[in-house]
Amino acid sequence: MPELLHDAALACISRYGVAKTNLDDVAAEAGVSRASAYRAYPGGKQALLESVFAAEVAGVVQSIHDAIGPADDLGRGLAAGITAAARRIASIEAVRFVLRYEPELVLPHLSFAGLDRFLSTASAALAPAITRWLDPSTARHTAELCVRLFVSHWGNPDPRVRLTDPDQTLQLVEDFVLPTITRKGSSNHGNDH
Image (cartoon, rainbow, N blue to C red; front, side, top):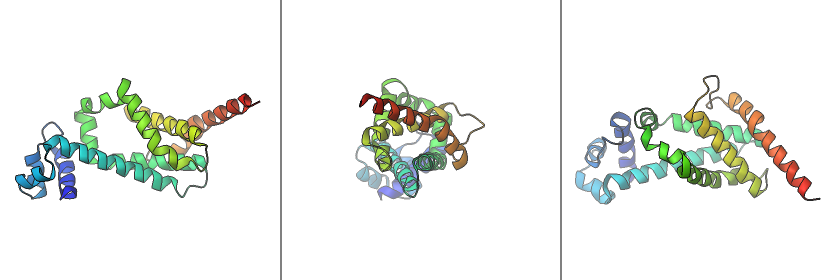
């Protein structure tokens, strides 16, 4: 039943937004009783939203790892991961609704201390996917650069660049991420002597 309620919650949020969606709406959308919905989520709407958010984030992270896996070099791996994330997020209608009509729900997570927590969590989740090319510290730094690039683009998109386009994303990675890694590696190497 949680998966049924999860899908119903996303459908309701796509139509009404987070503020106007309640657990009764979700139960009706899922075709289950109100009591069943509350048994599945005793914490009510907040518990359901937290569960849906966690599942969607896990899905995005898995999409990124799956996309990076077959890549044969770091640049293509990073571009594939960013493209996969952009496509997955763009495919979630509820996210599009919230970003358009309820951005105040997202902004605290992408500014000030919220951004620091987001960057730390996202970087830790993504870094293992690129450690076959980079040492763990550099992988974490590189993952953070990619997350920053992604957040920056989603917050203020350049109409000439679509992160859902693998070639355009690869160009961004080659222009902005890979040179930074090369400089960081050179300065670390210089400190070893």
